[in-house]
Length: 147
Length: 178
Image 1 (cartoon, rainbow over the protein chains, first blue to last red):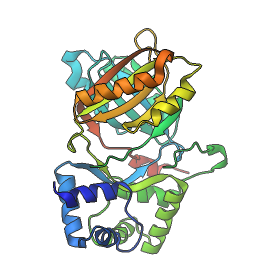
Image 2: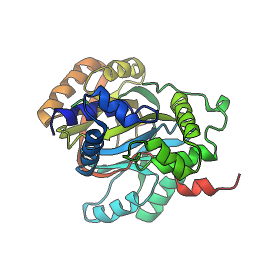
Image 3: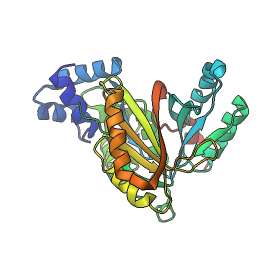
Image 4: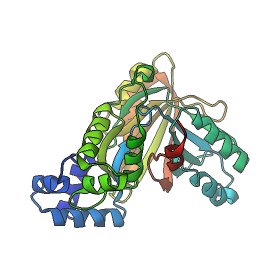
């Protein structure tokens, strides 16, 4: 990764403009050209430096449901349970963590009442208790990382 | 970033069928071509001017936060990602949560319910460092900020990303009858 890659990552976390030639507009800001920007962006996505590039949907404004949930998964069943949880399209993120509650995932749904349906499905398919941690108060959210 | 709570009862139906098709067509990724919005408009079957108008409205309304790159912080050198969790006096959590949220290394800070006896923590603050020593220092800073109001804390490191697709809409919702 060189300084142009870093500049692209930092700039594109703030959002692509909505105009006819948005990559050209960003390329000019970064003192490069459109073809280079698109090549670099493709490479950053392919190499996994960027996990995706597109709309960041705000579940609650859309009227959707969102929660953080956790499972205590027996080590020997971890991969099996992981497959079950990840197969649910409503599971947006899932992390293994070093705790008795060792699997933590975000459930995002189009309608608030669907969160409970997803929890019920995970419980019935895994036989495990889902611990639900819905947000009660938001103090801060900043998804940008400068590199 | 505007993440204020919006009263949905006065907000009305947020997405119509075309909006929904736009989100479905773009959520896996914007096209990497010179005129990406024209390409999306073609997929959705609407004029590109309308597509851009709708995207601007969705952005203005906050349905879409941004059309943006989402970094993989592991690959970018932030290898120690700790979910720090705190058992904070309920009377003081609103004030103290705000203070913790203002710390520069905190990316998310939320109040969440306890699940006794397995889980006694009600304040969650995600922190990110290059290594675990960084995170330990960050934890000490949070600890000083919370003082006596904090009875216990822990840090859960992510040891593996199992899934990171982001928030997705379901295609079948597109076909549901009105």
